[in-house]
Amino acid sequence: METVHTHGVWMAEALQRGTIEYEKLWLFVTHMGDPKAAFLLHFPMMYYVNRRTGIAVVWVAAISEWLNLVFKWMLFGERPFWWVGESRLFIENPPQVQQFPATCETGPGSPSGHAMVTGGVWWVMASALASFLHSRTRSRLLRAVPYLLYLLVLVAVGLSRIFILAHFPHQVVAGSLTGFALGLALNHTVPEWQPLLFFVRWCMGLLVGALLLHVGLEHLGVDLSWSIALAKRWCSQSEWIRPDTAPLSSLTRDCGAMLGLGLAQFWKPGGWTLPWVPRALCLALSSLALYHVNRVPLPTSPPFLFYSLYFIRFALLPQVVMVFVPGFVHLLTAKNKKD
Image (cartoon, rainbow, N blue to C red; front, top):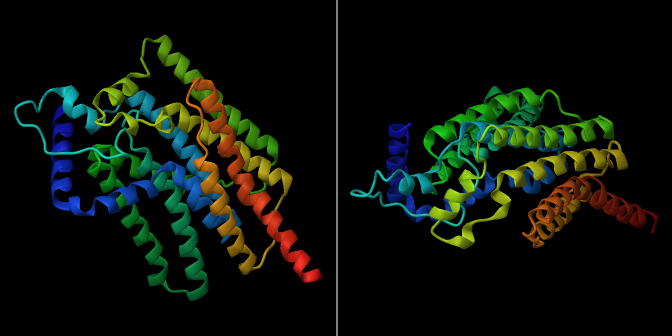
């Protein structure tokens, strides 16, 4: 793998040298490819356009990110920003590369979680849009447009991860292909009308399954905190190390979102039927609410408290989007009609 990693570093150097003036664009793209964006941005946007597609976004994002965590624990992938120094291969000829605020993730690098979740979630959205366009226009050309956009987004997210030294190219390719396969498969199993017990079982299954794997690997002598130590050692700015990039953060995020999805459908099965203008109001209010919920600072010590609150935060998100905000708008519009 040394040769693959070395060529990956030179590719990152060439990409930075040739496109450094687009730094803000690359950082924006990598932010849009963040697994959190699937829950905070893509989910509410798609839910108010099409209920099934919105639920599918959460479903695919949670399972894709959970599988990404399992793969990372088992594959021990390096990240460029620490491998450059740790390998000691570039002492005489160091690459001219720099780190960014989004660089210093603490989990292992293979496969890319951004590429994997983007590959799954954006496939769901692209296929839904393609079906809609085809049903309205019967044009194969227009139907192909969402899939071309899907490829463009996937390539852009992958390049952004290489640009900021978060991943090697082969990790991006592996994540993209795996995400595409998961999106294709899971889009046919969307739990749109499942009971609460279904989601409780999935939540517990994801949580217990990951913890059992964690305990089993550590029992075999595998140090699963190795990547955290390397990230802290080689990150150029200590404040760029964020607890929400740790492997257990993604686990609690996925389990919380899965439970929240079940609770939202339990409180209001089928949701509210709203016209387009109230839906647009719902999207605006939900986006505002999720923005502030996500900005609430969480205590990082003790870790159990942080992960518990992080779980609760993402369990609330589907309920805000599917129950609280639409319920409020429904009451508001119903009152105006009576007046």
